[in-house]
Length: 571
Image (cartoon, rainbow, N blue to C red; front, side, top):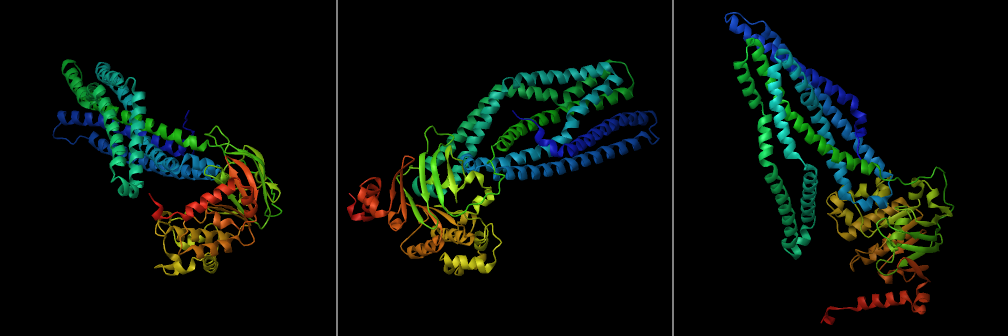
């Protein structure tokens, strides 16, 4: 359930904008009344300058000036709200467990941060001046007409009530249609995004036939939904809009003015004011549309702001060494019934190389992501240097652990900025880290060296180059515990020696937890942890595990069969 408390930071400026817009509307109505007196004076004394006309000009200028001031304050409020919301959302997401952020997905969060916040910007900027025009103008106009001639006021009101009655019939049961419309539009947006992002795969495999067909189906569904909606309400909607148009009200008032006795000035004023009252119906409907759209955005923003925060320790606890212990750890993802990890216990001694292996889905990556508290364990505890990681402040915890993941994320800035990410390192320190990561040579060959922009997600670099940049970043951070999640994924024969040398430099003197599928890279590990279905099944060194003839032996033989496979064996 949403509320409008999200507007509180700019409510004062919004109220000022509404007040200015209200004064503008009153000045506009005043100018219409004065215009009627001006016409009356011209008819009575055609040769004399009608003095009320000067007041008409002043009132019109005042209405225009106040309306511009209203727009000025409403847009300032909109920009301020946009800044506040994006800042608050960013700060909140920075304290939400990273696992929850990953579960929601970058696309959904980007939509909230960009589209929904922008929708509220539009709502504040455009609805603030509309409020007075939609509510104050018709009420003030009706009161003026009742003062001028109650019969003509009731006639004008009857036309508008008839229009709203027809519109209400057309919009009856409209909420399901709105939900269908939003769902169909979301499907089109998702299909467009999928088609664009998957373009290389689309062109390589199906020439766009299957992917484009999904896009076409989404468009067809959207068109079918809109077509059905239009057929159901087209006549009543058009008829109601025709009645709410100023022309029917003007015609009725003209007829009443000809039939009923009264002063010419009153009749002219009623014509002008009645038309103004009818014209305010369109801003009222536009305002309703803006409110409905903004409500959807408010709900989504408040859902993000309601995400539970990572529970932070208030203690200034620090690890005594770089050891890592999992003590009877179990963990279950929120959207899964089965445990991803079950009663997992092991100990990594400081300065040792530890390998984590097992079949796909064994829980290896979950172990790596629990260590920095992407999620908190369901039961048990994880300790670094003898201290439960839940007792460490986030900044203290992250200073203990560095990561090199299978897919290394690079920002669109320069290579130097990507290496020194989060650190005030100078150029000499950045280059030293790059040399240790065996990246200096290829960086120097780039057009602008370390100042070369890598493109979005590092698209201008190869996979191996991105990996070495990530290793240089980890070397520069120099944290005592290192997690390598399939860090050799982009290895190739030409660069294998350089990558292994870079990893050796990175791992020196650190407590290393290496998740690996290339079992040849972990033969010299101090300890190999073998997992299956979330449990620790075997533990030991390479030769010991081979002699046991268990899961590790099976994985080793499968790995060697894959290494020995060649094209001449096909078929």
